[in-house]
Structure formats: C-alpha cells, structure tokens
Picture 1 (cartoon, rainbow, N blue to C red):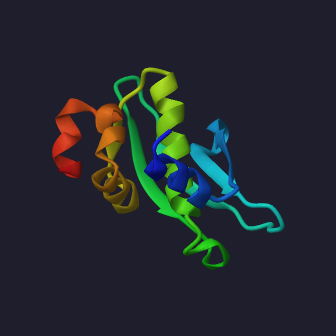
Picture 2 (picture 1 turned 90 degrees about the vertical axis):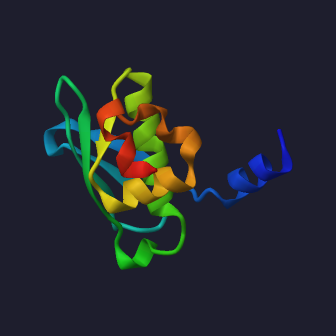
Length: 113
C-alpha cells in the first residue's frame, strides 16, 4: 500500500452506508448522530441516475458526502450497473477521482471530464 493510500484510509470517516430501495437512495450515518446524509438515485435497466446528494450541516466538512458517493459507486459497480451523474457533487467527486469513472455510462462521460 502506498503512502497516499494509507493517508486516504486514515482520512476516511467512520460512515455506514446502505442502499434503501424503497426510497431510491443511499443513506449514510455516523456514530453518535441521528442525522442522515443521502444520495437520491433513479434506477433503470439501462443505467442509474445519481440525482442529488444532501449532507446535514452537522456532517459537513468530515468527508461524509465523499464516502457516501464512493460506497454508492462501489454498490453499482458490484452489480455491473453504469450511472448518469446528474448530481453536481457526484460529478465533482468523479472529476477528483477519475479512477472511479469506469461506472459512468459512456453517453455521459462528458459530464465528468
């Protein structure tokens, strides 16, 4: 593991992320808080649209939103699904982490370049 990978792991907040199909969103929680951050998605057979990310003020600046997006991308990747990153936060995350852009549907790669 390189030094930067170790730094990334140390910087990663303790966040639990789960997909809630009935709500069509990923939800993130942190220990000691009842607040919930979420990433609204619209699944379809062709691709999933990542629509909107919302992080409560109490969680801002702690990397919760980035961890939420990272784990949501891992979820769709494991299922062989691609995404359309309409959410500006998701698009910005993908611009900062081009190694994660493999899950962006080819028709929408322009949104993260």
